[in-house]
Amino acid sequence: MKPVLTTLRRAPVQTRQSLRFALAALLATLLILDTGFVLMHSAAPAHSETVDRPDLAQRIAAAGAAVSPAGSAPVAQPASRPTVAPPVVPTAIAAARLSDAEIAQLAVEPTPAICGSLTGRLVTETVPSAVLGVNLPVHVYLPPCYDAERRIYPVIYLFRGTDGYGNWVRNGLPEVADLQIGLGLLPPFIAVMPATDESAANGGRFRYSSRGNGSWEGFIVNELLPAIESKYSVWQTPAGRAIGGISRGAYWSIEIAFQHPDLFGIVGAHSPAITSDLLIGTPAGFSMLSMARSIGEIRTLRIHLDAGDRDWAQRGMRQLSGDLSRAGIVHTVSTGEGIHADAYWKSRMTDYLAFYTATWPRIPRPKTAPASAAVTGRRSQP
Image (cartoon, rainbow, N blue to C red; front, side, top):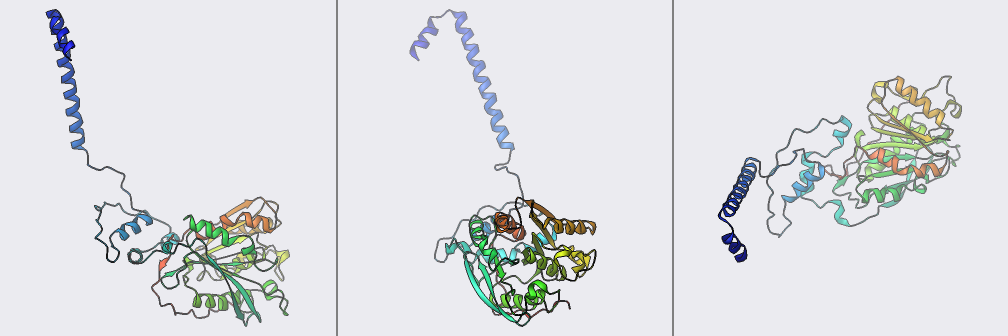
C-alpha cells in the first residue's frame, strides 16, 4: 500500500486529482448498489415460496411432529403455513383418501413401516361352499407390516381362468406387490385369489353356470366375501373393494361387478373370455352390458380392459369396449404384446396392480370398528 501512496504523491497534481475523482465515483456507485440491495430485501417477505395444499405425506409428517414420544423432550413446532383451498377431486378418489380425523389418529400410533418387514405373507385358506358343493382353497396375500389390530386395508378379489390353481401367484403378484409397496409406489392392500371347482363332481359351476345364487357369483357374494371380511381387516365399502380376473375369470369379474356395483367399485378384465361363442346359452347379439343391474349404476365403476395384441380375446374385449362407449360409460382399454398365456399376464402384473390401487391411500386407514365385527351374507340376484 505504501509504494502506491508514494507513487500518488510523486504524480503530477492533475493526475492525482483525476485519480481522486475516479475513486470517489467508485465509492458512490458501491454505496448506491448496497442501498438498493438492502431496500429490495427489506421490501420482500422473509420466506417466499409457492403456497399449495400439503399432500398426504406432509400432513402426516406435520401431525407426527406435534406428538413427542413418551419420555422424550418436547418437539419444537414449525411455524404454521397458510394453505389454499383444496383442489376438486373425483368422488371415487376423494372417498378413498384419509380424513383429517384418521390422520390425527395416525399421529399417535406407530406407522406400519416401523415393523421393518419388506415382504408380505401368502396364506392359504379353505372356504366351505354350499353353493359349489366343495371346500375351496383360497390364496390370501397380506402386505408387509399387516396390522389387523389397528389398520384396515383395501382388498382385491382376483379370479383365474381354466389353466390351474394359483396363476395369480405363479405370475408374480406377491413379488410385484412386495417390491412396489416397499418402494412406496403402491399402497398396502390384501389380495384374495380363490381356486375354482372345475375338478368337482358337478363338472364345475364356476365355468358352466349362469349368474345368480347357484353360480360362481353366489359363492363370491354370499360365501367368500363374508368369510374374508369376518377374518381379515379389510374395507367393507365399494371404494375399497376391487374385483378382477383373467380369461374366464375376467368374465366373472365383469358379471359380478355389473350385478353388484353396491359391493365393488373397481373392476378389471384381463384377456376376457366374453364372446358369445365361448358362453353357453347366450342369445344372438349378446353383450356383457346385459349383465348389468342397471346402466346408470355401473357408471360408478372404474373399469379396465386389456388383452395381448395376438390374443383371441381381443375380439370380445373390443366388442365390450364399444358397448361401454355407446352407453356413455367411462373405461380404459390397453393392449400389450403377447398371446393368451401366462407370459403376457405376468408381463402386465405391475400395470394391473397400479390400476386397482390407484385411488387408495398410501397408508392404511386406522381401524375404528371392532375387530370382531362380522359381515352378514349377501344375496345375489336370482
